[in-house]
Length: 114
Length: 111
Image 1: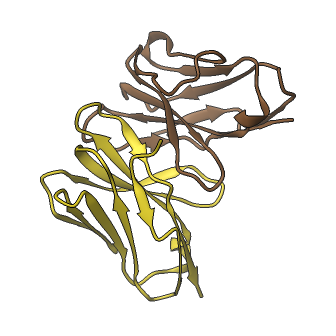
Image 2 (image 1 turned 180 degrees about the horizontal axis):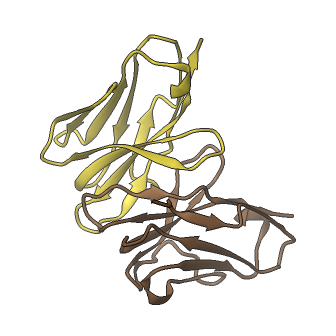
């Protein structure tokens, strides 16, 4: 069974440019998470979806970040415009449900803004 | 902001020794989970302990949970070089089901 797939693995962009990340969760997983991880830190939740509904986006900087999960399967996370401080690893994870279930993580997208 | 805090931040041990790390959290939880992250890789789930459980074992891993103290510990017995990684605790919030991670403990196992 394929795991959580993210693309691209690496992205280098200039500041003020837009960027998008894509995530394909494990088949049948209703819950999808986007996390941001800075070097030496733990993942910080940006947004959580239950099927196609964003149930927790309280930590998503909505002035520049947006996300969508069409048909409750794949998801994209977009930053426009990117800032230097957005350089980090963006992790996608999925789980069967939102309670008492483990999360499966993708390899992440390492974003460098120059 | 992060819900959990791991202690110590870093740990260096000899192969064959045991490694213990602790996690403290602030709010009520449904469960607490431990994850491992090797350098430059994704996070891998190790073990989940529910709020009504006190201890759980999985292979060389032993996890305890004390909800009265809002703390958990992860013990890795007979460590191996392959255990070198960062270990994170994650709490599943009782009210919001938010899976929140701590800053992690970096474990180095010396051959």
